[in-house]
Image 1 (cartoon, rainbow, N blue to C red):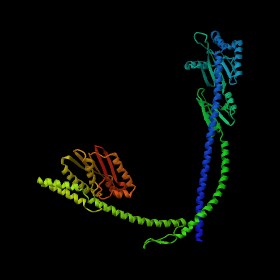
Image 2: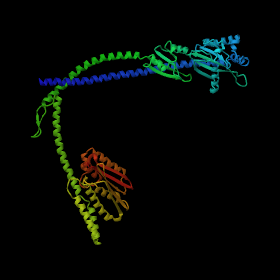
Image 3: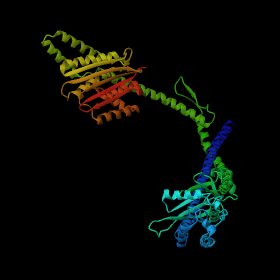
Image 4: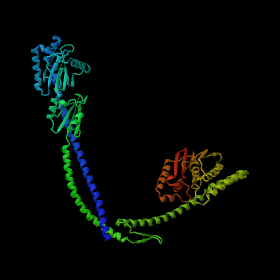
Length: 599
């Protein structure tokens, strides 16, 4: 009964875990699909908006281009030029010429009216000069018969603008123009009328052709899909000039952002562009309602599919879980017994809450036994390494001893007994220090004394050919280091760095104690080390830090006084707290720094 309960419990746990995973995976895929669809729809709609907006810009530019063409034709028409030239030369500067000459006014009016009939983009054509003589054809904005409606300040502004820009025409975005009380916003093209028959050109008037923004708005609205909404606004003050919304007149003083917010357009697809030459901007909008409805339908469909898939996968999971747990239960029963690893230790393996727990306990027991076995191997290897270290301490270069005895013999012939005594004491200390068999670390001061004894004997051999400096910075008492860790570096410096170079030789040994670390720096002025040699040593250090036992054993062999031997012993003692650095320039110097953390 207990086994059956545990089997069902285990199966349900696996089933629930798998179903949570599958449900999460399907949910993620679902949301990724929705996100991808929304992104693609956004890209598609933005592209459509850009195309539509470009069409609107082209329509607007074409409309204004027609105004420019009409202005050019009228400003160079011989009849208009002759009429304005005659008014310039004989007109009454105090009264509107066209008010007092009705025949001329009627002919000009009819002539201008023909242009309006030909061009549906033109709202009004005005002709005037600097003295206020004016006539217009098109939409009535004021009673032109009365000269008080002529805005002479506006005319003066136009005159100055032509002088400043030296353009052939001006394009204006304005409300007030040559006629006062104008309340309609227009886009206007103004061109000078000049008498080119004279030896010099003379400005005798202006042609101004306008299109009312409402008319441009109506034209754009009819040329585009009704699903789109647009706003035309003033680039200078950002006020709304026109829109596809009805009853816009009362909203013309609104900022276009405020206008869009008030009409709920901020959450629409949006694209914006400007016609800098004309001082207007266009924003086009498209509702996201269609996309929202489509997404809701997709979500509903996906939920139905999700439910069906969930049921299908649940059935499959129940079958898979049943087939999976049956052999696990059998395996669990086979390991439910007491296992003794020693006479003192017993480990009961049936303490787990389920089959996996019981198996886990069994593997824990196996790992415990494996750990003990590995510890025995490590202990054996450690003893082997210690034996190698003792052998290393016991070795001394026989050539060095032979040379030292030869030096004693030389001084004996000279009967310099004081020097012989000093040499003997140094050699005795050197041999005693090298032959002590112990795995204990030695005081740093003893290691440095050993270095000093060694260098005393070296100086006796090479006399003035070698200069040796010894520096200590910090308190070195109660600091212990591996035995025989510094002197081999000096021996290598003499053998490989200085022997191939002419005297004088220089060796400096500096000891520093700082921030719980001891550090010894050995510098010589020898031939230096190649970069390849330095790289090989650093590569060895990297491999050693990976605890490659084969590399460590190879470089602790008896007779090894190489740099790798020194580094290996530092690593065995200090691990990641070791200090090892090489700085060298060929034919100049070598600096080797070793050390470690003593606290």
